[in-house]
Amino acid sequence: MSISVAIIGLGSRGLQTYAPCQNDFPDKLKIVAVADIIPEKVDIARRRYGIADEMCFGSGEELLARPKLADAAFICTMDGQHYAHAKAALEKGYDLLLEKPISPDADECRELFEIAGKLGRKVCVCHVLRYTPFYNELKRLLDEGAVGEVTSVQHIENVVYWHQAHSFVRGNWRNSTETSPMILQKCCHDMDLLVWLLGRRAVKVQSFGGLYEFRPERAPKGSAERCVDCAVRADCPFDAEKIYLTNDATGFLKGHKAWPCDVLSPEPTEQKLRDAIANGPYGRCVWHCDNDVVDHQVVNIEFEGGVTAQLTMCAFTKRGGRDTVILGTKGQIIANLSEEMIHVLPFGGDNYDIDITKLASGFGGHAGGDTRLVEEFIDIVGGGEPGIRTTTLADSTESHYIAFAAERSRVEGGRTVEMSEYR
Ligand SMILES: NC(=O)c1ccc[n+]([C@@H]2O[C@H](COP(=O)([O-])OP(=O)(O)OC[C@H]3O[C@@H](n4cnc5c(N)ncnc54)[C@H](O)[C@@H]3O)[C@@H](O)[C@H]2O)c1
View: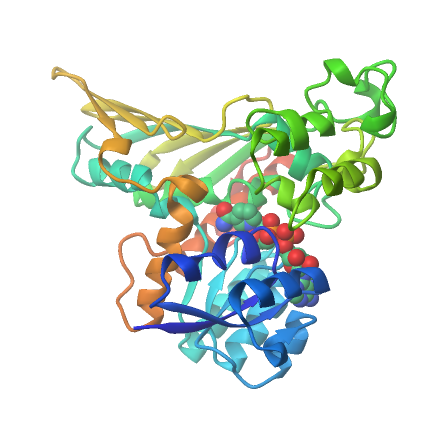
């Protein structure tokens, strides 16, 4: 079975993550139409995937004004655009691979769920972590009762200091008037994982957090509006040249050509990056940006049956990934995504370790989640049944409600929010 696809939004996700899946699954996926408001990105997609000129569009609106052009649409525009693009695409007859968040607005999430149901469309929301070998193994352990019944979970989303600077201080998700709250943008995945792993719905949510570091009052003496003019950049880990050129984990000069460098320029070169750092938003001092989203937040959740979870999202980590401690009636699990290791500690039994790298291969793109998600979506559009890890709109909406409740609680000083306020 092969499906045809229209990609709307040719950014990090549409162009750099999902489009290359055509190379991974050449017999199953054919990109036939693309749209973006930036002509350079449309041109790159046209060249890379041999798309006919008349199927290259200057916006999602233009593409969606045409009769249905493909079996499915990938909605990869920015958070606040998903609703309008997804609604129009559903009405045109497309099945959807829909980037998260569904929408920054709870009513819009609800409405898309209803429209998709009424029209009988298939929609998978891109909660890619569900598709990783790591979380599949964790889910298996919990479902098989390896530590009895889970009573409590402690979960950390390690944002990483340079990722915070890139996305949430200088980049797309820095300002709450333009985009989603960070707890929705970054942690709807984590909320989704908690609901999925526990198999329970949330009942109450409470949250605290704020913007600690990236404010003008915290700027070091000698700093400037832009990194290139800064007198103290040598000591600054957030220096744009370090992040995009010389950092071992991300720098172009250390061999990293993809994200985050390709956000500054879709086909980066050293000169293009230097120009972007000198003149563009990603060269701004992290203490002198127009950001207001949080850099640390905690969320307490009570699930059905009195099960509890505590989530910490924090910018100030060197290591990425998620760390999860699961406390069950018959044992404990310590799971570390960045090391692909799960330690199981049964009460009264021998401890054992599960090294996920020995169970599977292919850990690129969100620990292997990105391509596995697309592969399953192709099967579902082709008539396959949704599986245990398929993130339907109903499942994803549940995770979004928790994030909305957490943000409401944080803004209202930590008030306990009943999930019935959303359902
Ligand atoms: N599933 C995940 O793990 C994951 C990871 C990162 C981002 N995301 C989500 O994916 C979405 C896209 O993120 P990104 O990092 O690719 O952002 P991006 O800014 O790189 O890409 C968005 C693209 O949409 C284009 N665009 C804007 N208006 C348009 C229009 N009217 N029609 C067509 N294209 C238009 C922009 O020019 C840009 O190229 C966001 O909602 C983000 O939250 C999901």
